[in-house]
Amino acid sequence: MLREARAFINDYYSENQLDGAYKRWQKIETEIENTGSYTHTFDELSYGAKLAWRNSNRCIGRLFWKTLKTIDARKVASVQEFEEALGHHLEVAETRTKIRSTISIFPPIASNGVAPFKIKNYTLLMYAGYSVGDQVLGDPKNVEFTQYCESLGWKGKGGNFDLLPVVYSVNDGPDQWYQIPAHLVSEVAISHPEFDWFGELGLRWYKLPVISFMSIRIGGIVYPAAPFNGWYMLDEISTRNFGDEHRYNTLPLIADYLELDRSSPFWKEKALTVLNEAVYYSFEAAQATMVDRHSAVDQFMKFMDQEEAAGREVTGDWTWLIPPHASSTTAIFHTEMKDELKFPNFV
Ligand code: ARG
Image (cartoon, rainbow, N blue to C red; front, side, top):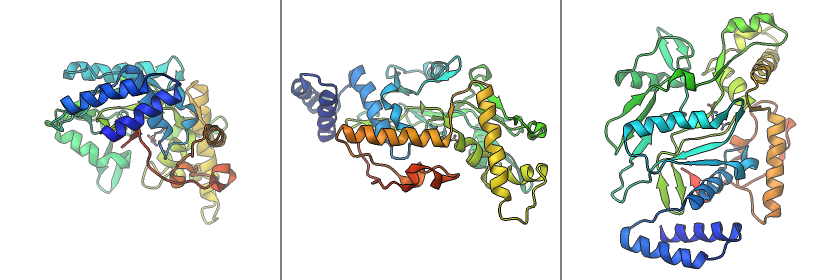
């Protein structure tokens, strides 16, 4: 902790051109020696969260790292406060139509190693998946998690787009769940600007991707509950969530509506393009924040330039950064980078 705290404090002070790093460091050192840990100021916490984003090797949206908004939820102690804080996050992250990248940081791991709060969901918002015979209703990715929610007493409507509850523990105790009130979740129904039949597929998706299973580690301190959101890149919803065979697997259906010849090796690409158009234009019509793959890559390349100008080497996980569709038409495909873990980060 001493080593990581020191490195973080140095970065925080030097990048922000602040005086007094050594004085602050001495205070932290004494605090760690006396208590085994130390407390971040709000500004340290907030800058640490930004650095964790900047160091997120799998994220293509890092150009905007400085705009991250931190909600300090370190004082949250009760179940009621915790659940309210989750709702508050969703409200704050989406102001009218524009999504703001936001993180809520709950209390750190205690000195005895206990996590005051821990969220088990991959993301705060997810759709249930039910296996019915040899078929799956809803999101196949979440079948197991849905069964787990049911074992905790949650019951879904049995539809294709039922929002799952948030499953979490308090002080490493038994898991409990909280259903986020529907009025706090905005979703977009998917239709296509040219093909009227597209709406018949009944597809929809929520606007906010809020990753919630990761801890954030800043200056040696681990905050086990730290849900954070950005906005969607088109491909995440269209190409992957709707297109993957082991997810909503909509390509064969779309191909049938389009009357594509499925013996041709190109039917998937054709269906995929129509699916991408549908998601993109539906989000646009709903004025929901979303970025297409080409703009996202342009932004990432700008981020790389910016970092290089600041004398920092950008690390990244190429396999995650390249868009899953038409990847070689984007510059990132032709870029090499190291996948090295730097702190602060999400773990
Ligand atoms: N790919 C995940 C999903 O479809 C979300 C991951 C985070 N995405 C983001 N744009 N911040 O739910």
